Amino acid sequence: MAAIDESLTTFNCQPVALADVPVVSCEDFAEWLANDLDSNSSGLSALFGVPATQHSVRLYAVTNHLMTGRLCVMATDVGERYASLTRNVSQAHWFEREIAEQWGVVPAGHPWLKPIRFHHSYVRGRDAWGRTDDEEILPCVQPDGTDYFKVRGEEIHEVAVGPVHAGVIEPGHFRFQCHGENVFSLEIELGFQHRGIERSLVGGPTKRTLHYIETAAGDTTTGHATAYCQLLEGLAGTEAPLRAQAIRCLALEFERLANHTGDLGGLATDVGFLPTASFCGRIRGDWLNATALMCGNRFGRSLVRPGGTRWDLNDGLVEELAKRTAAAFEDVSGAARLMWDVPTAMARFENCGTVSRDVADGLGLVGTAGRACGIDRDARRDFPSGMYRFAQIPVSVWHTGDVFARAYVRWLEIQRSARFLREQLRALPIGGVQRDLGPLRPSALTISLTEGWRGEICHVAITDEAGGFAHYKIVDPSFHNWIGLAMALRNQEISDFPVNNKSFNLSYCGHDL
Image (cartoon, rainbow, N blue to C red):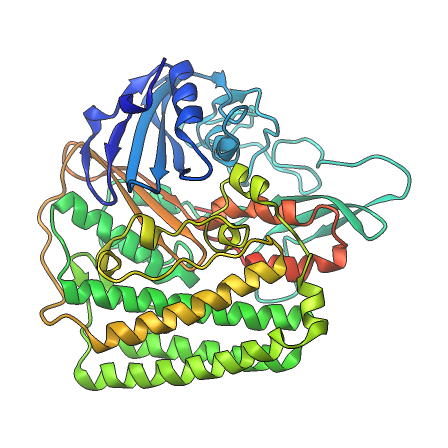
């Protein structure tokens, strides 16, 4: 029997020798994972496969523990089939579907084994459904060649939306099974772009690596860049200067403020409340322009660099950022309060798209989606890095799990992030912003967790004997949360899909890596 102390314990951005990761039997691996995950204090940050031999794949699981800040790692080798972990660990369900798709191994007994993207195994030349690399995918069926999920009965009808949408939006397919206006089931299909980001990172880091990281999810440029750079610094045994760490945190919070403000405006649009919608569209631009002052790019590209930041902030720029923060926060406060005070808007938010705490725990929802269900988790507090080790932001939690909760948690985070910005701008550490990195530790595994504006961002790197990337895994918070949107739509009116979709506001490209 595998016990918890048999796993390898590490901490955020702390490298460990790859040879020290325990490799156990599939049975012990499954039992350890089931015993190690407690929905109140731990979660599954990553589960991924790496080729071990010509005929086997090594699965690595990374679990997190809030109370101690520990990250636990364990591995097992599987052949063409293994007993599905999802039967006892529901958080593994999406990960196992990805593993089946990428590596051609079958998690036998998985309750809903379908591909989650439109691509094939690139190692074995086939995937777990027997599709080969040259096999054509028909647009009328699932990528595995089967029909979509269907509900049978009188007055049941099907509504298909996308993947091409009537707006500037990335491709994603939503298929509803409805009885009248009531949604019985929503099936979500993603991955139409075949981006291949993770594959491109193998063999790095190179000059292109940071570009790939910054574009993994463009609206989370700073979040992913920070996770990557902290991981690299851990492998090099180097820490960025304190001033650079503070500037990174400023950029992360500006990114959070811009997106949360935009989401409040989007939610107002979807219920027809135009005052808040119009105000927040403009105020989001104010937050983005503050980021542009820091580095010349509204989304934060070119700011975060391995070893620190590319740009420093002079006294005049710090003063200007403080003024803009105060003005933008005053504006967004007025715009948000307009909406909170209107009963007709609140009536569209409350009791709409409710996800229960039990469902959220079981699925492993993270970030605003999880905190809106009462899950008290935030990597800034639980696995702090950078300046978050010295300056805490209170975790924003609500309990109702509906559209209102997901909107209100954003509003709480806006208030607390703005306060954090004001404090940090008054007390920036003195010193440089860049430190050279040494060679990366060879044959090592490193995990980096950062709280992006959507939730937990997890990067895992495995280095080869020369210190290059033998494997690189990115888990965007959207990967955890898309299934939450599907659950939110059950027994809702189909006309409520837009406001529910915006209340999650998940990334298509962040899922398609």
